[in-house]
Every structure is written in C-alpha cells, then in structure tokens.
Image (spheres, rainbow, N blue to C red):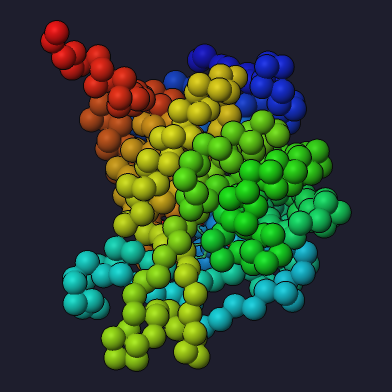
Length: 383
Ligand SMILES: Cc1cc2nc3c(=O)[nH]c(=O)nc-3n(C[C@H](O)[C@H](O)[C@H](O)COP(=O)(O)O)c2cc1C
C-alpha cells in the first residue's frame, strides 16, 4: 500500500501549515464473503476516514440529531450539519421557502423534479441545542465523520467563539459557509464574503488561525471565476474546498397571481438553485478548482464536490475530475437517506466496468486541457 503524507506547502505559496496529515493514497481491494474482490469505496481525506465518499451536504438533511443519526445508520460516509451561527434568534425562516422545476414544461406534478429553489436561511435552532446534538452523535458514532458548518458576522471575536464552541462539541472538521446566496449579506455573511476576495482573505485568516481541526471552505458559484476565492481560502490555510453552493435563481413567476415563486405574503427574493439541473455547472466549477489545486498546491488539498448528485455515475464524474468526497443535499430531500446504498452500488458498478479497485485508482483521471492551446496544437493554418 502506497501512502502519501502531505505537509505544509512550500514557502512559495506562503501558506500556513496544515493541521493534519492529508489524504492517503490507498489501493486496496476489499474481499467479499464469496472471496471475489469488491471495489473499495473507503476514503481518507485530511486524516478523516470514511467508509465511502458520500457525505450529506449542509441543509435540511442535517438539521437535527434524529436525521443525522438516520444518515449514519443508512451508511453515509460523513454528515455535514446544517449551518450554525452564534445567535439563532437573528435567523427567521419563512414558509414557503422552496419551489420546484419539473421536467414537464407545463409543470405536471407527475413529472420528475429537475431543479429546486430555496430561500432557506441557516439553522434557526439554538446553537446550544445543535452542539448538544453533535456531542450526542459523536458519543454514539465515535468513528463516523461529523462536520460542523459555520457562518458568522464580520467580527473576529464572534468567529473565534463560534469555532471554539463548535470544536468543543467534538466535530471532526469545519466547513465554512462562504457561499449561501441569501446568507444575510447585510451582515457580511455567506456569499457576501465568498464574493469579495479582500474580505475573504481577512475572514479566512481569522478562521485558520483559530481552528484546530481541518477546514473546508465552501465556495459560491455566483462569481465569474471561482478559482480566485478558492486560491485565497487555500493560501490562508484551509485544508480543502467544497463547491458548489446553490446558484442564484428565480424559479418563475406565477402567471395567475403575477407573483414570483416562492412567494411569501406577496413578496419574494432570488434564492438558491440546486438538484439535477445544476450538475453540469457544478462539474465545470469543480474542474476549475481541481486544476487550481493540482497546479498551485502540489502538496495536495482536498476537494469536496457538490451539485445535483442523484446517481453513482454523477459521483464518478466528480471523482474523475479530482474530488475526494461527494456531497448530496437536494437528492436526499427528494429520495431519502437510503439513497446512499444506490449511490454506493452504482459507483462500484462503474469501478468494476474499468477494473478500478479503489477511489484513488481513478480520482483525477480526467486530464485538463486549455481549449485554446488544444486548438492551436490541433489546427495549424497553412501559410
Ligand atoms: C433547502 C436547502 C438548504 C440549504 N442550506 C444550506 C446551509 O445551511 N448551508 C450550506 O452550506 N449549504 C446549504 N445548502 C446548499 C447545499 O448544501 C448544496 O451546496 C447545494 O444545494 C447543491 O447541492 P445539491 O444539488 O446536492 O443540493 C442548502 C440547500 C438547500 C436545497
């Protein structure tokens, strides 16, 4: 078994030291009861061991103890809880907050959902309640990976307090929500930070000087070049990038009421788009970040890919681009926690088709080509 220990990057990138040994390359075949080799789905990312790369993405599927326990019982590789902040009293969630796009142009409710819009804010449950539930989960599932997702206002002391309290609950890592498109921008929260590189650099610096567990910075796709904030987050010491959060959207206008959807007492606001429809956009963003990591952080950083995953093949695409883990949020809301079994089976079917025995066998297999360079090389005008 080949193992690779990742350390702090060379001084050329001026990055602070990473907190934990990085991912390990392990080519292994798990032998099934019948004796036949079965593709091994296990991954180790930033020192965190998971039975498979499938992680519950922050959102409704990680709202409370009961649902997160369900996720572990069903076999998810890890769970990222719904984003928490210090004062849940400031978070007022509205109803309705979801709208769905159906494959049928007339919106028949019998046709499959392909796009999902939400205007949901972060957790409105008291932080203390959430932390007690994290503690309970880690007590019951000590060897399973629980990641706290956090977001705070533009205030160093507040970020430090939040990190300290969430870490004390026993979480294995932190995901930083720099990306919610409706994440209270008036308070410099969520995408308001992820879309402003100067702000991001400052806030990332505060976070990484305080955190003692691995940090994944979650990026917004609502920006021209996602590599710019990703580079800053990695240079300021984040162990990994998670992408994408939802895409800014308005689901539609109700042509009877003449109001946008979803509509709360006659008012609406652009929200975040997710589910199958965003998968191609997520693939493009993940490809750009994977390339950034490969070219500028050769010592290795982790990448957690998110966006429209409902099948093992969707996950295989992300891993082929270089993702270490694959998160699922809306897919779980639509199909339930048991989805993980189907995802694992389909991913193993894909691996068998190519004789891949471990995730590392094909992670990052897809080459990156700058299209203009390729064109120059392929097409040389005569004369
Ligand atoms: C209803 C809803 C609530 C969400 N809440 C959060 C959140 O609290 N924090 C966060 O980082 N992302 C949140 N997300 C974004 C998801 O984690 C994910 O990045 C996005 O939906 C794309 O993945 P998907 O297509 O698998 O849902 C939410 C998404 C949905 C649909």
